[in-house]
Length: 114
Image (cartoon, rainbow, N blue to C red; front, top):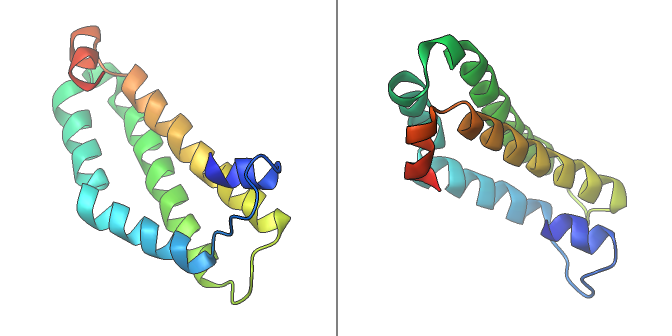
């Protein structure tokens, strides 16, 4: 949301560098074990009839996170509006996919995560 706010002029005098995106994404992937946690959630907490859809959402999440890191690593200058928008859209995709994964949980399982 910060990237979108910067892009829309709601936050002034703040610069996010590509290196920050790479570093932050790498820390997220390493420290949160998001892939392992999604796998465990799918295997243990999502009804079997919804697991295929959940695996697709999990893969989309991981692909978007990897794309943030790899695309940011290619930028060797200050980011412009197009890059801010690209990364804001990728982070939004991650949030949407994770929310969709949450929605696939059985009702009693959702309470654990809310």
